[in-house]
Image 1 (cartoon, rainbow, N blue to C red):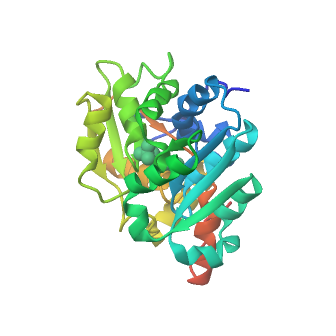
Image 2 (cartoon, helix red, strand yellow):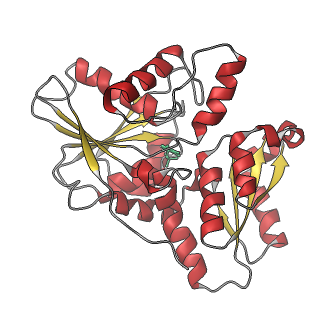
Image 3 (tube, rainbow, N blue to C red):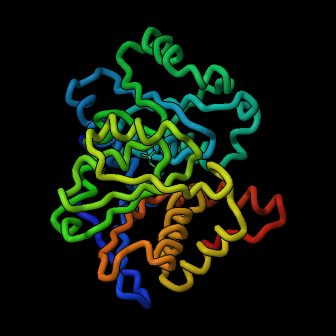
Length: 301
Ligand SMILES: *Cc1c(COP(=O)(O)O)cnc(C)c1O
């Protein structure tokens, strides 16, 4: 059974200015799978299944709250592949049941190996060891980013996305923006909202997309995974106003920055902007547990 393609609705976020802002709801693909992770795994899994492996087995890497880990486990269950996650941080080994992302991934059939941060950093050696142990396995890198992932992102673009001047996405490992950049129209400007403070991203994206039609803007708001009070307020207001749930790690940070840019007249009058809602909503559960422990305002669900 292979992973299917389908088309996704685009909806308008009404503004008081002569600028049109739309959201493409990749989050609607699946409640537990970030939309972009689905497309990043699309060719990776389908081309692997095309080889008819005897015992399909997918191994990948991630942090304890990773949307990619959640997506891999859920897709593994749906498309009948065994999955294993190499999780950063040995200390989680004792208490992974308390982590909503890992708990759900496990319910979806994923097994884990917990590795130290040092081992995790040296993913090339880890991959070599895994390949020896599991020669038939499909090994997908952290965040799912590789060349096949970039190809899969083409399904986020279709005849309806062609009329937009700007295409916006949150940027973690850079695979999603690389795909949008690669498959964008000649006249489209691609904007990436970096939620990770990582200077190597620009070169990584160019290498994957082979185009320079994109800009990377800072949107990390204190660092990857950090959740400010402003961020929470923005997400809760956005939900109340527009009825759309954002996540605190990616899409909330991107939309907040897009609103700031609109406020600063960054976009010329008459611009048509399309932002991709890449999902990530599973991360809210883990975020809220942390916020609760800190006695802070929660993200409304
Ligand atoms: C992973 C993720 C991103 C970033 O994608 P990259 O390809 O790693 O840059 C954006 N949004 C959500 C919700 C994600 O889960």
